[in-house]
Length: 162
Image 1 (tube, rainbow, N blue to C red):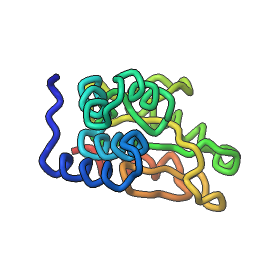
Image 2: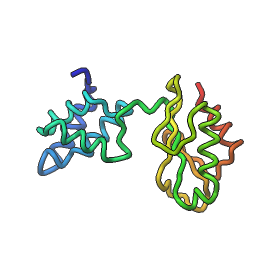
Image 3: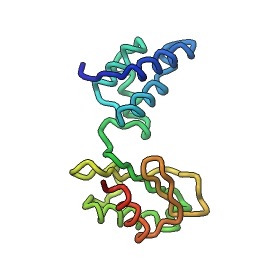
Image 4: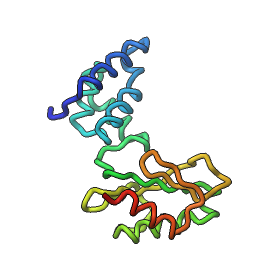
């Protein structure tokens, strides 16, 4: 197994496991903690989590592949999420997503995460980002942007292109 958890993650997982009546109940929280540290959950990280939770690896893999907020692959340094729910779609989020993909040299299809070859950017749709009156809305990592035009998106991309 090549996944090596930091001391911080080890402590966090130990604390999480103790806060639930059964180890398995901490599964999602443990996976979130791994993803927070590593950016995604590798197969080796799944094995590590299964060992910590006294579960079979398939139990962890099922969670990672079921929940769309959990990632199996490195999403890139800057993850761009464009809201696709109704309000944002009506405000032009699909055109914004296509424009961002075009600027980054990515396919425009609506499938999952698309990552640039250099690993700088990952682009994906997101479900509601909770700003329905100010669409289209997007996030770059944890930074939130409202009413984003194609031109504004280009400026935002430049801000993260380092």
